[in-house]
Length: 239
Image (cartoon, rainbow, N blue to C red; front, side, top):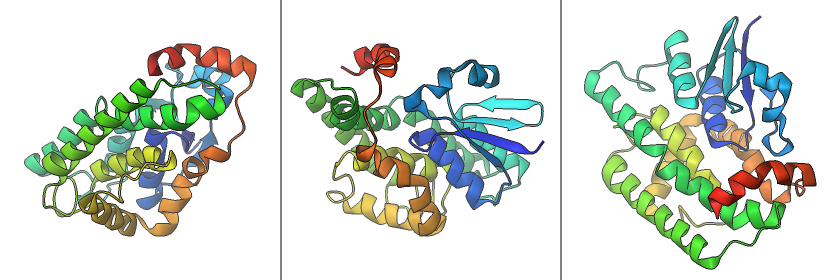
């Protein structure tokens, strides 16, 4: 059996993996796992990944979870062009630096914005306290400033003059607040220019294809009662 990718393109890490695999020409079988239907908690999926998370890669008898690990595995196995994950020690370290930082900073704040501004009130009927949303938006602004000042600086891309997996991870993160109606790029011309460069490098068709689900998230139907109960622990964290 060939390589399989278990994904839900509503998920940021899944979109990064999907774009990268398509861009470097990885042949794979797409296995859709719908998070809002709880399919990641099914017994069938737990046999694939006991962590109950997507993305997941299956390469024959080898199974790998965690998006960053999957991106690097694909880069090495399919010998992606060097700029995606450079062999040069310091250039590689710059990519690693962003990938290590984003988990508890930009990715977290972007996800919080999506859930607090749209997912919780629209799909779960939960009222988000204004002070909680204000705190989340302030944290997003802090992370965006760091993205510009620390990582992008005056370069074309986050880790230097060429696009890397760091840019894919970052751009897919930022599409979460965009889908929730936040003017992430309109108010930050440096990030807007970077976004345009990333989209051109990826290819507009592939970029739009990967983000179609999240950009139309507002049109998704509300989750059912059983799924609301399953999501209660997450709601408590988000509020």
